[in-house]
Image (cartoon, rainbow, N blue to C red):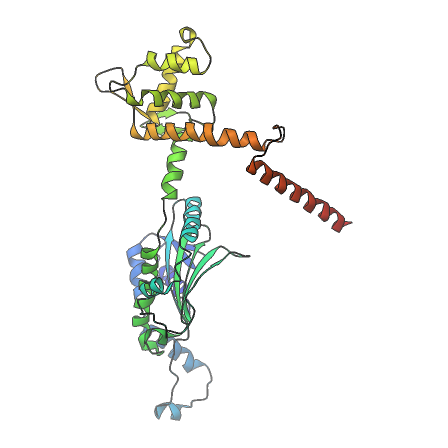
Length: 363
C-alpha cells in the first residue's frame, strides 16, 4: 500500500491541484490540507480497506468461522517513511548531495547509528553498522543500516532530496507487528529521517558558492539596470581585479581617473588615450555586481568586502593555478618533469590504447 498514491487520489477527489514527482508529490496548491490527508491515513482506514475486499473475495473463513472470532489480522512486514525536500534548482541539489555523500561516509559508526535511530547500540546488538554508497547503474544513494532496517538518501528524479527509513522488522525497535502499532512506528521512521539530516554535515555551502560565482560571471539586473558579465579569464576583467586589490588599503577610496590610469598601464595602453566612457562602463559593472560601492556625497568608490575577496580569489586562481597548470599540460608545451603533465600523458596513452582495442574488437 503506497501512501503517496493514497494522497494523490484524495487530492484528486477534493479538487486540490498538485504536480506529481514519480510516486510522490512535487508541489500542491494547499500543502496544509495535503499534510492533514497524510496524517489521516490511519491503521483503522487500512484495516477497513482490507475488510472491504475480504467481503468480496473468497477466503478460507466462512461466515460461521467469522462469527466464532476467526479472522485475518494485518501485520506490518515492511514500512517506509519518507521525507522529500523539493529543490528550486535541481543542479544545485545534485552538487549538494554529492558533497553530502563525500563528507558523511562515516555515518554507519555505532555512535552515529544510535543517534539516528534513537536506539542504544552495544557489542551485543546484532547486525553490521556501516555506510554504503551505491552508484553503479542507479542514482547515487547513501545507505545506513541498523539491524534489519535501514535509512536511504538519494536525489530523486533530479529534483528533490529524498530521505526514507525502511523498517523491515518492527521488533528492531521493540514494537509489535500488528497494524495498531503503525502510529508508534511512524513516529520512529519520521524521527530517523530528521535525525539523519541533523547528524549530516558538509564543510561548505556549495549552493552559496555557486550562486556567488554566477553573480560575478553572468549578466545581472539590479533595479532595472543591466550590467554585463565579469567573465573569468578575460584579460580586461583580470586587470580590473588587480587594480581593486591595489585600492584595498586606501581609506579615502579611489576615483574614476585613479582606476583609469592604473588599468590602462596593466593593459599596456596609454592612460591619456584610454576612453573615459569605457572606464565608466567598467565602474558601473563593478558597482552593479556588488564589488564596489560609491562613497556617499562624493565621486569616489571603495571595494566592498565581497569585491575584495572576489578580486583576490579570481586573480590568484587565474595567475597561480589555471595559467601555470595549462602551460604544463598543453600539448605544445616544452618537455618537463611536471607531475600533472606526466599524469595527463599517461591518461592520453591509455585512451589511445582503449580506442585501438575497440577498433580491433569491431573487426
